[in-house]
Image (cartoon, rainbow, N blue to C red; front, side, top):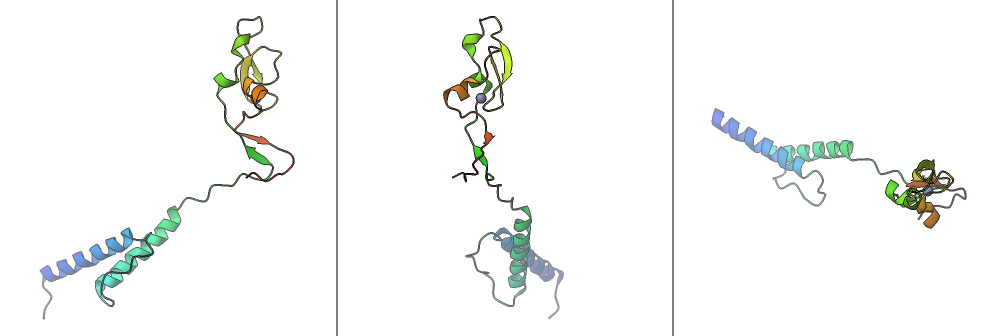
Length: 137
Ligand SMILES: [Zn+2]
């Protein structure tokens, strides 16, 4: 039996379809190859899944870095939350200061040393150094 161009075209279509199906299921472990073993489609499906898996491994984002020992994540704050608005009307009440606790800039009287958030809770910076190496839970 000779292979006509139409048969060849049909075979190519079936193989590429099987390949794309396998590629599309690269992330699914539970799915078995739906084609008969030993067929072109079976090979193509397996090939597609393997290629898809290799590709997934390459584009899989790395695990986010854990907070290192000695560092602790704290609640972030806005400049509005850190500002001592009640100082603004006073002489020297509208200075930009660096907070001695969180290190962030805040508006307030020039004699103030900590921002309003730190004065209240001590939790203003997104991350501050701690010195006892306590692991962060
Ligand atoms: Zn502060």
